[in-house]
Image 1 (cartoon, rainbow, N blue to C red):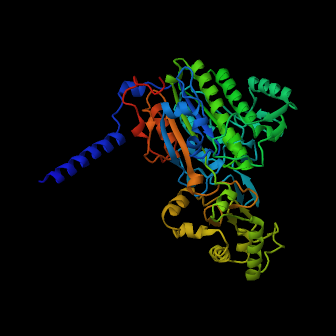
Image 2: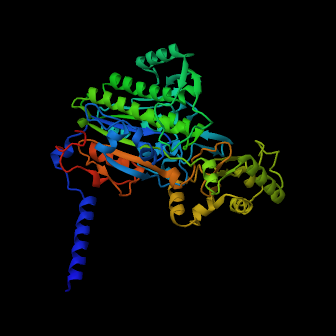
Image 3: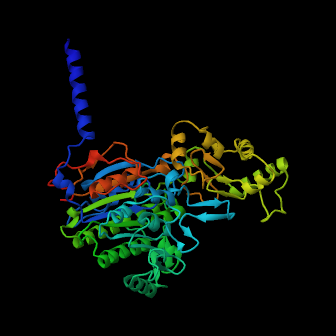
Length: 551
């Protein structure tokens, strides 16, 4: 064997050993495995695209240490950081994302494929956490969460979920939280649903928090830049000037909304004595303000940069509170940071770069399709009980719904009407692919990643009869800063685990959001949520608990 071959084989062996050691981390001992964290802290930033942590990192606080932690940079340095974790689904939104994070299951199982869908029985749009009996509840969500499994196993754990958005709090909390708390923007107060407590929906401490917020109503609120810009953003309109007052929706679209969320989390920690009991507690927080700012100003705006900087400061404050309350500090806390979805770049930025971007108008598409179906089949029967209305009664987030009762009355095969719709829409600018309910059942789907995303993200009972897959940078009219695709800008989010059993570092291995729940379940010694499909992120598990990632 010549020298070149020897060198080649040596390099291959070294690389092979390196790859094997990085993927197959040495196991922890039984004693270490049975030592559980006092608290699991899950922090979600709504619409936090993966690149925000890299774009704005120079403006974040210094990492600090476990006694005085910074925000994002503390977790990035002390934790296992997967910069571009994935949602492997067709349409990325708040409801589906939050339903995935602590269930480890995709929308085809959870039933939460979109935020809203059309119900053929009631002929109405259904909100993903709407409940005719209790107003808001998790009844539309199928399966369990990590918190539910703690309860199912009999542990005396406290499970609390908090967000400004009701769907975020409900879908993180699952079916059995001690409290799912969200903010009513009309009443401008924290609230919950009688689903969780049939007698006394709100604890006293929440009432006290609401009184404090009520006393602030009407106060002037000015949002100004907190420092020098990174140079990667620009004000949404000319200059950065935002003046409003507490009590308006605009006030929770500013750092005040972040402050409200962190304060509620701190109050909940004290009230439930989280991290001080005989079993692991779980606190899940979602910062909805980030999404409000994104929809209002877009991801390339200085407003988005500034709100991310404000979140960094608030995250640091939250971590300091947790470190002080939990016995043993952050070494007894398992932290997860992630997001529910990303967002498309500003359309004007895309067009300025010479690339194609555009919108779909649902009303125009509905009118076009109803006209075509009327020409083909005549109008739906108005004498039916109830009257059958239009052939296409709804188009919600690129999901087109047919009137099944009208089709049945005229003995029309649904697949025939679906094909007519596809034929009418395929030439529209911005349409990349179309598929129907019949295509899904027959496995006639677009190839590659799209096929995989459809199979995981389509709910046969709730998704549209025909679904538009747009070209990149095309969104639904009325919301130029939208997120409803499976493209990288919508599906890529950061994922960080930090704790005493976590090996710090930046990981290039593919991680999916469905991996969070089974990984947490591994550390908690509970069954994974019932429909969990993810894997345990073994590569980041620390060999010994003594070399803590939060020192």
